[in-house]
Every structure is written in C-alpha cells, then in structure tokens.
Amino acid sequence: MKCRRTPIIGDAERYELGKGLEDGFELWTDIITKGWIVTTNLIKVQREDGTIVCPYITHRRGRTFIGDGDYIIIEDDGTKHVVGQDKFPLRFEIVEE
Image (tube, rainbow, N blue to C red):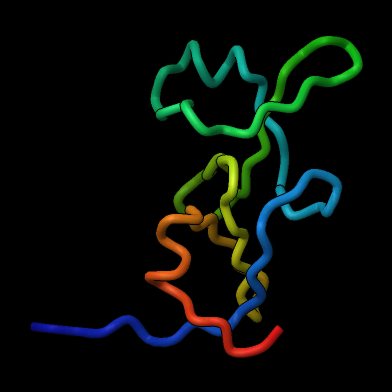
C-alpha cells in the first residue's frame, strides 16, 4: 500500500532560548552518560550554578532534544515536533508569515 502524509498545519519557529518553546531541560551530564543519542549539535545552556542543561520537547514517543538551528512545529492541537534545519524545507512549505 502506498500512502501520502496528510498536510499538517501548524506554527513553525526556529528555536531560540527564552521563547518558551521547549518543555524542559535535561542535565548535560545525564545525556552524555546515558549515551543513547548523538550529542554533536545539541543546544547547551549553562545555568548560574554552573550546570549545563539541554532543552527538549515531550511528545507521545518520549523526548526529543533540540539542536542548533532546529525548528519547533506546533500543530493546532498543541502537539510539538522538532525538525532539523536540513529537513524543514523538504517537509514544510511556508503558507503565511
């Protein structure tokens, strides 16, 4: 069976700290010691106490960490997705700004 992804209408915004697009932060030390994801382009934020954390969004499959240049897609029902800047133009077309 062949199928086509149905259009998803939502808001897209390149991730920036301070906009509240993430659902939380994970300690950098926990991320690298668990060793279950590629950490090369992850955004790292240093807190006042010196700890380093990485932002993420939560969805039905778990957590997705946000990388440098990633877009956050927020669907009309509030569902969030992280899309890399390399994949964004292949999966989405801008319908209005």
